Length: 261
Image (cartoon, rainbow, N blue to C red; front, side):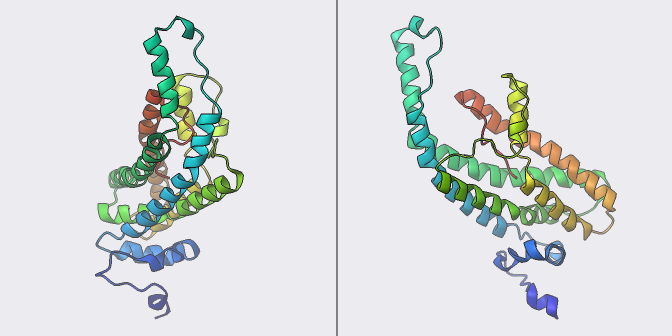
C-alpha cells in the first residue's frame, strides 16, 4: 500500500512527473513501475530534458556571440594571395558565426536532435544487443528504461547552465575531453568528440539502466552489464559522428558535440 501511494500509476496517463524525483532517490522501486508498463512512458523525462537543454542554449548564446566577436579568426598564411571574392567570403563567414543562426538556431536544433534522436538510437542499439543476449523484452520497455535513466542528464544541463551564467564562459572541455590526445588529425577530433560525452552523469545513467534491466526476467547481471556497455560504446560512436561531421564542415572545434547522454 505504501508503494502504491509513493508511486501512483494511472494506465491512461503518459506523463508521470511524479516519478522524476523518485527515479533519483528510489531508483529500484521506480524502475519496477517503469518496467511494468506496457505502453510508452518515455515522454516525461524527454520533455524535461528538452526544456533544460533549451534554457542552456539560451544561456550560452550571448556568451558565444561575444566570444566570436572578441576573438576574430586569424586569416590563413596565404590570405594575401586569395582573390578579393575569396577574402570577402572569409570575412562574411566570420560575421556569420556571431549571427542568431549560429548562436541560437543551430545549437537549439542540435540540442533537440541529440536528446530525441540520441535516445532513439541508444534505445534501439540496446534493444538489439539485449535481444542477441537472449532477452525477450519489448522495444517499448527498453525505450522507457533509457528515457527514465536519462534524468541525471537534467542535472548536467542545470549545472552547466549555472556555471555559464556565473562565470560568463562556455563549457570549453566537458566530460573527459581534456584527456584528448594531442594532434590535429580527424581521428583525434573524433576521439575528442567521444570523450566529451563521458562524465559522471553518463556513469550515473548507466547505473540506472542496469537497475532497470535487473527487473527484467531472463536476464542475468553479467548479461545486463555486458549488453549495456556494448550498447553504450556503439551509441557513443554513432551519436558523436553527426556533430563531429558538422563541426568539420563548419571549420569549428568540437567542444559541444551532438550527444545523447
